[in-house]
Image 1: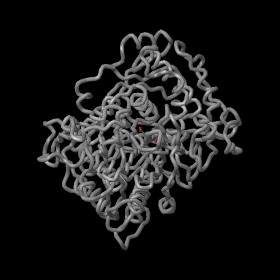
Image 2: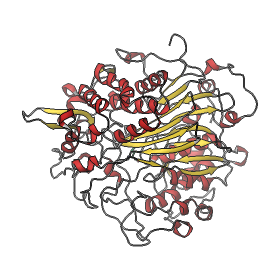
Image 3: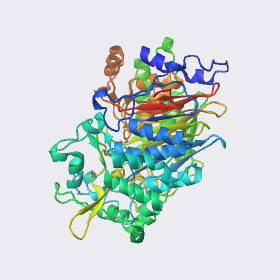
Image 4: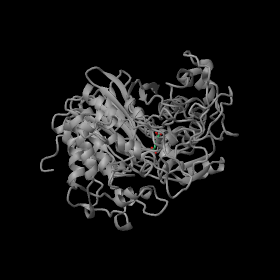
Amino acid sequence: MARTAHTLTAIRCATLIACMAMAPVHADEGDETLGVISPVPASTKGKGTPPSWAGKAFRQGVVSVANPYGAEAGAQVLERGGNAIDAAVAIAYALNVVEPQSAGIGGGGFMMIHLAAENRTFVVETREKAPAGATPTMFVGVPNSSLQGVAVGVPGMVRGTAMAIEQWGRLSLADVLQPAIRLADQGFAATPRFSSSIGCGATARSANSPEVKDYFCPGGAPVPAGALVTNKPLADTFRLIAANGPDCFYKLMPEKGCDIATGIVEGQKFNRPQAPGGKGGSMSYADLENYNAVIREPIVGTYRGYTIKSMSPPSSGGLTMIQMLKMLERFPIGDASLGYGFGSAKTLNVMADAMRIAFSDRAVWMGDADFVPVPAKGLLHPTYVGQRGAAIVPGTRIFPNPAAGDPRLYDSAKAGPSPRLAVAEPVTGPGETTTHFVVVDKWGNLVTYTNTIESGYGIGVFAGYKRADGSFRSHGFLLNNELTDFNTAPTTNPYTGSPGFNDVQPNKRPRSSMNPTMIFSPDGQPLVAYGSPGGATIINSVLNVTLNLIDHKMGLQEAIDAPRISITGTGSGIAIEPGFPQASLDALGALGYTLTPSEIGSVQAVILDRQTGKQYGGADKRREGTVIGLPRPQGK
Ligand code: GLU
């Protein structure tokens, strides 16, 4: 792909190799060329809209967020002496206000942290859990189950973010909640995406319950871009959490005014009136009290000498992506003289078939490893990956469709007695689900955080309950539909005949695709932190960007801007973004692939230049990607 003037001037630390270069780089050279993305058009600027930013290469911290207000919240916390963990938590709460359709305290996510001083990388895992009363058949026969209370998992964000702040933050939870409280209380100008995502028809997720419809569709029409939006109930909820800590979310404590648990338990009883025969959830106060966030080790692999750290189970992200990278490593992906290079038919051909093979294994062997014996070592064992990847032959399309292999032979941890099958794909709404953001601070600590309520607007219901007088006490946040990431009907493992890995079990976490990732230099120094939303396409968005950085040697923004491809199953249908050469598309068609135009993912990232200490951000124009770097340029 030709590099555009924009991307060339937007990136100082042009490639991963440049970021690792041993030659000294003049500290100030070209600083002014690093543009900060401000996607909010002038027409939407109004009360509460942050100023536009024109940036430089930075040393005091960078935030990259899919929303300008979220970015501003993170930058303010860094400026007040917070570290990357503080800023990331501030962003997560702020996004609950300004990007409520994608993520918030009604859901959960994966917060990968790299602590510079300890050179340690781990994940604060806040995935939603099935209630104790959940069963493998609970979705069977339920109409529109992703819009019913039965889909709501026990939310994790509040417990995990509080844990992160307490253990690794420099500020208090109450401090980092302030920007979000201000946004909810005083309001913000609706961004174009906030507005355009809203549907007000009878089947829209954003109109699934009367209170949610009133909020997003006042007078029956979507809130217009630029309109001032407040969320006073959410501001009150945040104040309760700020004053009383996370227990105020997970326990009913009337003496402290903490009634959020009632809002969640009552809210998830929602039985969608538009679809008679719906079903509420079984979540109890005990389920909420028992929620535990977990510190997890990432999945670690190597690719062309770089170390890749990605998300471990209950996500399928790390295992699937690193399996693909290992299968692709034998091809000279970056070498145009051998017919590869960015966007060539050969490159897309081998990428597509690596996706098909890895997703066939994902469907059988991945799920919540606290409940099922995911053969993680076997899935990444060089012999197993070599055998699986041998099916990829440039110039041909794997036919018939690949079937799952059996990695248990290569799994030194040994598979347990009940290997399971997982076949369902996440229910996702178009382009509104989930959010990804990244922070680096002046100490070099990194956070890459994917957060979600699953589909856009979750189940389309606010946490809340009817008071004795009949009025609605809203808590202002949307409840997730994460449990539809489980198989929505019981399945069977073709190898063992036992139940599916990703079938519902009480207290289990549904399999995710979210994949916050970091790339490290061969000697173990962090270089890049990134990730994406997009359901199962997340894994492929992160793969595309990884190849762009390492094989195609693109600058960070260029790697994000470049068109992507994705296959999330074993079939030959490629979701493809515009911008690839027509000759490549024709060649793929001739091999028997079908191509469907799509928009794929929303990648936010930072890259570190270890030689100069400079920090750079990249963000995705597919949504409202925004980078703010510190110190801020004078007058901005
Ligand atoms: N719930 C999905 C997952 O965990 C993410 C949803 C999305 O990104 O669209 O994989």
